[in-house]
Length: 387
Image (cartoon, rainbow, N blue to C red; front, side):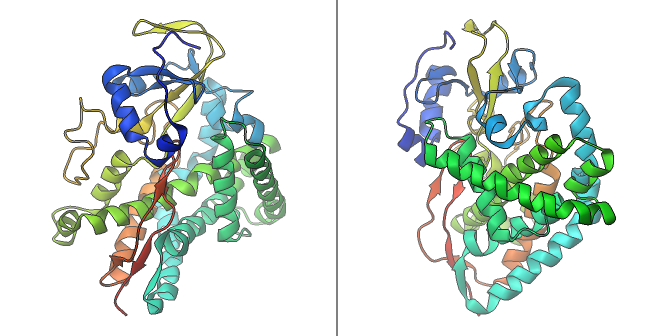
């Protein structure tokens, strides 16, 4: 463990809303050991920004970590040259240019088709009926798993997320996660001959074209699904909820004084879809007077960084006019989220503007519960609109 002060949490309360507990940690124990999570948490923005880059101490290589054991050793669990090598291979599928010039038009077609189907109904669950399929249909294209139904892609993503956050060791969660990874493997196996015959810019195809070994290729597709489905899904639904509950902020966009990209950046600061990144302590070290022992765990709390009072005035307030530059919802070091450009394109440029354009008078029609701390988003969002 570490010599950091011990801070206890109520796991259920932390999953319901982690922000009050993290505010107390930032104030009283910005680096704190939390026994319920079995890890030392970094909660201040500058500490996270600095220490995430120190991979010799806070290593992504976690051979015994949940992600590696359940999903295989993907590039997120590698450092240095090994990480850079695989990241370079995947770049053609995930780059800002590819997102803008290739994926955006395809995303738009898929999203409009979903909205055209929904529009005559006058109501839906925005998470289940729009955000989930819009994210999944985009991710099917990006991964290359166009043979995978949207519902199955969403199920497997959630199952892997739950498995990787299963720090209490629930055997049912682990079993479900393994069932999900097996499903992904079956879909990968089915697509490989098709993509060999007709290569495209998808993540599976570019890895095959580069000759990356099979185990790494499969692990990286699972990684992309685990983060690439839930983060855009939760950001689409969550940002829409934020605008519907803050009509003054939405009016700024409608009047041309702000953009949907401002809403996306502020939402991911305010309620981070990806709340943290785990690290293994690879060597004994000292940070801010706190000693870290090898082979213990540290969590970099990106969600807490976005609420750091040193950078954000009234961080609990949703304000799309604020400077979100210091926020690090996608990370800050060499493991900065490779899919950030894809998420920004889908959510800011396509899903949010098309949603409000196609469903006039969109309004909430019930309660919107949120859950999670490692990953966080709305679980249901009943809405209605004018037909």
